[in-house]
Image (cartoon, rainbow, N blue to C red; front, side):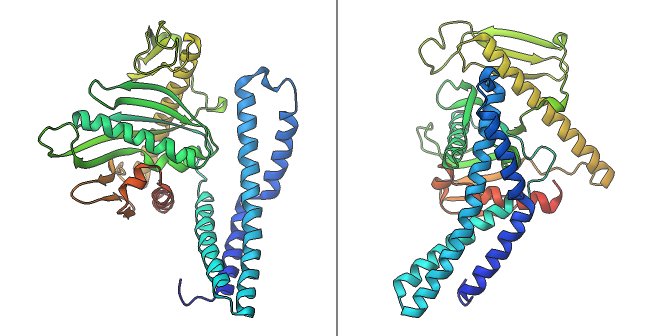
Amino acid sequence: MAGIDPADEIATLTSKLDSIEAVLDPGEMEREAADLREQSADPGLWADQDRGQKVTRRLSYLEAELTRLSGLRSRLDDTKVLFDLAEAENDEPTKDEATNELAGLRSEIDQLEVRTLLNGQYDSREALISINAQAGGADAADFAENLLRMYLRWAERHKYPTEVYDTSYAEEAGIKSTTFAVNAPYAYGTLRGEHGTHRMVRISKYDNQGRRQTSFAGVDVMPVVEQADHIDINDDELRVDVFRSSGPGGQGVNTTDSAVRITHIPTGIVVSCQNERSQIQNRASAMAVLQAKLLERRRQEDAERMDALRGDGGRAWGTQIRNYVLYPYQNVKDVRTGMETGNALSVLDGEIDEFIDAEIRWMRQTGR
């Protein structure tokens, strides 16, 4: 941004923050937060565990967003003062400090601006994510586990609670599949661009000749179902099997037949859950995942109908969305947006915000 007057850029960022607040409406956010604080003070709130969790998660999110908005305002004001002070006293270290702070503000406000683009029907929902190893044998299973860690680390960086419902471990290494929840408002809208096939190229850890291996993993992103969605499932459409949990588990987890597998006969969708000790809890979690998969199926069917009406002929995103190359060089590139970086290891450690922001902008531009 060389050559731009700091005062002009601060004015531009202030104007952009005004526009963001016009969309987010902090006044309404504060009113909702006040109502949720009253609800959270009710001793009877936790009689319904699900409602209690929803209230506290929503309140935590709103308070964090309000603090973030007010903090950005305050930092813009402080940065202007720093530049004025540096100029008045010809203080280069202070000017450098102000320049670094301005760069940080620019990045944070740009990221917040992306949040205003999340206005789809289900974008405000929490998210359920499934990862499945595809072609590539043990390398694909290992890659699927890498992706699980990547998303959990991303959520951890943002202080988003997560809950792993089910993990099926591969025989040699890694995982066959997993399903987990990101329990934060707008998690679905934020992450839905991650839906698709991810491709990894690297030297195989499981080939004794050390050859290069290409492997694939599929990621499905679904919105959490709410009562208003009316996802009705008849008992006679379900086959329910119980089995003993497998793989790593806490004491008692894999000593009883508490794991649950549910097959939705009309669609062939199969879900399972084994993270709880109680068969009843596992069945409830598995039903939540099944409802989310059926809701996402309905959303995709609606989108395909709209594409047909627009004359798109069912144009798809394309199943492959991102390439991760670790050999003979390091590179991660999104095939839709063109976003790329040479620091592949940081991406696999959860630093995927630039990719997510680019996806959101791309989906908005293309009407996805």
